[in-house]
Length: 497
Image (tube, rainbow, N blue to C red; front, side):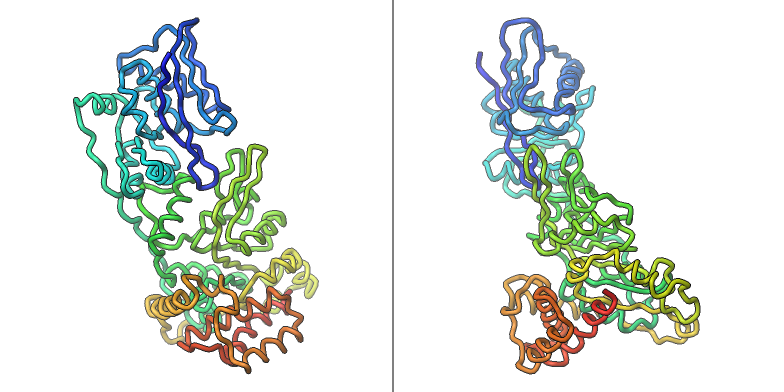
């Protein structure tokens, strides 16, 4: 018996792996079998497909219907194979033309009434289909998402019957237009922050160079308030970055309306989040917070309260810009080039060093609390800033500071200088040999590295921060004063550690 074929995709990280759905209808006892290392959700597709065909007034032939998902040694997960299985069955029943259906990839979950529901991963699937000169069939609500893949024929259908009528020429499914750009959420303005000049300066440096930063201060000092204003200082994503970030969010099912993500993401997981939630994993190896924050910000409030295992798992993604989830079925790699912003109290009670409310267990309380963060993790922090509480009288009399728009303009100019000099890399990703350093600045940095016993990583990060300060000053060569300011932030990290 001839075999009907329809393409679909499985997902390994953000890569869409082609899967061919093969259907053979042969003589024998009536049966509906799915083979090819399918999980429970895929196995249940036979009941959804059967019900959808019944809703159209069709019935499976009283024969042996065999569905093979090739390659057979690749794990198949998710309900998005429903639509491809249904189309291949209809082609095997000669309801649809086999040659035409074979030119499409299909993703969609079927309801019992035959309607096609949205699924995760349509954008990377559309890109995979485009690379293989295939069209894509998906749910009507995700047509705009698939259209972002460029030159690709997209059939966005509300239900299975409409799709059958389209292939038969009874009706035409109009090609969808790209869904547009996701609206940026409201971000609080930096102008609302009174005082805290050192912390605001450090925030600007961190935003300009995409540096990691640790804010240390008592409860209510304004650590979270500062971090919440960081997204308003960052420039928009480039076209390639927006497509990459949107692909990750599509895999995670977090691309509402299929609209492209143009602003850097800002993720703030709770400190009780598990390791799988932070770096990715789980039963189906989904992207974690570090990947959802790709090209954006990962904010960890109360950093020492995170489980030690979750915190230490951040070390590799910070260095490599990616995270790998190992499973028996394979290894899945997700991009994770994020900017880490963390906040913590100086001790468990929060009042170590406070002139008004003294910590009763000082200094041991602070030492034990800081001890929850390992030395290698602290070594990956570029800037450590002590945030002190601002008195009410100072808040009332403090002059208005700069707005987020004003600071963001300087940061955009700094980022442009970095990208021109370093082939699109921010300073946090660059190597010191990519930017010039004066002899005086180099001598100071080497002396400080010896005196403070900085690791090679710490020394490199010191030069990167110095380079960002020079960029904000619109200076081509890193000078001694730039290194001196960067040392101020590095010194705080060493003393606290």
